[in-house]
Image 1 (cartoon, helix red, strand yellow):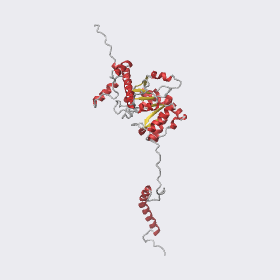
Image 2 (cartoon, rainbow, N blue to C red; image 1 turned 180 degrees about the horizontal axis):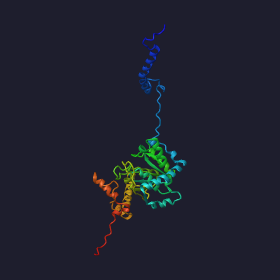
Image 3 (cartoon, rainbow, N blue to C red; image 1 turned 120 degrees about the vertical axis):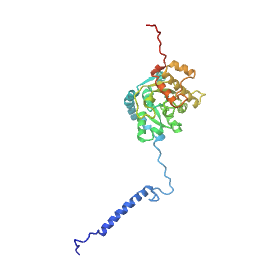
Image 4 (cartoon, rainbow, N blue to C red; image 1 turned 120 degrees about the horizontal axis):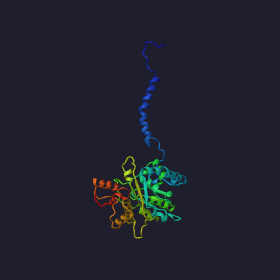
Length: 341
């Protein structure tokens, strides 16, 4: 029967069914997607009942494997980075002056120089790059850096860059665990030297922090001497909380290697390392003789700063930073007699 032209148009049953199907799909798709994400019991199990699937072994943090960074290829790349861009950047930003390397010359002249544990104070991320170019040979070419596992190894790209550019190894900043100490012991036995920050982290206010026992413990366990190091100036260039570095001058002072005495435990040896770094800090602002005299009288200015808090502590820090190179501000000014007109 022919359709009349003036009759109203009505959708067919097939079009109605298609429209209803689209509506049902829009309503049920979010529910199905949530159920799929939840898995069992909304979906069939992918593992038989009663079988425990072991978790994937962690590969970041303290478990990050850095062995690849000490391969011959990685070592060549790192040497090119350190002697090229890193050295130029450190020189341009920090303009470092290095003292005290002659105190290591006796060990450097040996046919088989022993590995060392360098223990500097820590005020800035710049400290590691500064140590990478300041440590003398033959230790600079075989140097690893103990870096905080929770900061430098929390992301894959960051861990890769730290391991390749700085030969960093992950370590717990609060306590030296058995896994980390075993790894460091094996590295030192293979001839690698170590940079470790006994304070455990960067200074929060520009003054130093009390030393932890990591360097002393590792020295006692491996037999490697500890070299106290004082780094001056990096806190004002790129200290904690600063968004971008600003140019300045820095100083790195190396001390004589230290070994634990038979009567010393880890805590006492760590205190002696801290006193040695404190003396080097006084030397960086004054001179060798004056700093040793104050050290003998136990009057060396503390790395941790004055006891008071607040603005007076910050004022004292600004006064310390204004001392200038080699303690020029502390030297007595020469007074000429008044001979008249």
